[in-house]
Image: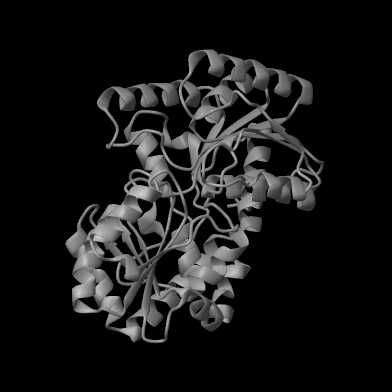
Length: 408
């Protein structure tokens, strides 16, 4: 994509990235890595603006500051709708933008995306960009809430120059909902540090021993916040069926959240506690080693943009079983890198996992294919090059090209 978008800016840019909160999550890691690259590789003057990292999910704030990224916290910038507090956040964003005088404002997540785009547009920022990591509207929310979210996104979409999606599925979703037109959108896959995942199996034996697994155990991983719509209950249902057929299966859950206690009770009441291990929050640097200890990954979330855990597992050579939602099919290629199954189809999930448990050769083949595919698609350096070239295109008034950043 970078070639299609033209040569890079010959001079450093002044850029603000705005995100609602820097919890440990895919959108947040994407944003921090992009800010790092813009500063270190291109010499850009970058300011990262965020709300407070509230909640049990952990924070990328220390990582951003350790990388030397100038960061400003807006205490009133929160996820929840609160007209008075949102108004204060909007005024704070206007003040920051006016003082910094950026050429580019790049927003992420719903609340920061709406307030940040409006503020930047009204102040005449030359390039206003928004990234859709996951649409804020979905079929599982009340109709009134869905309508309100779509209306807000339509309003904000008219106040930016371009929208990037982390998957083609995001563009399709936005266009079908009438939020924007396809000529205003471009797909740029969410980059990451791929090398630690490519080396994830180097410590496999040690980490499995630390976790109490033997060579006979088949370890199924799930990496997600312990939160609503993440599909943990579906995996518990699947475990009941799977363990009756193969008692050597184990489940390794990475992540924390507000549902931890009820999920632990559900596991215990089902008599499954000996088969499950919940790590809670882990440092991002620990994640590749934990994936290396797994044999396969199950992704049962009901809404995501393109969950980073899918390419992370595939980069480590682990096959994936995923619900066919949003951008999952762009990396989980059915019968090539894993298995795509209909959402909430626990029977299909069980059968897919059984195939993997009973065929080490199949696991290896799927994982190897996924590793090659994702190594081409998910380099954060490539992502930043594409994003920066998009900034240039907008600043030069050349429009939004209809290209893909990934590989078919």
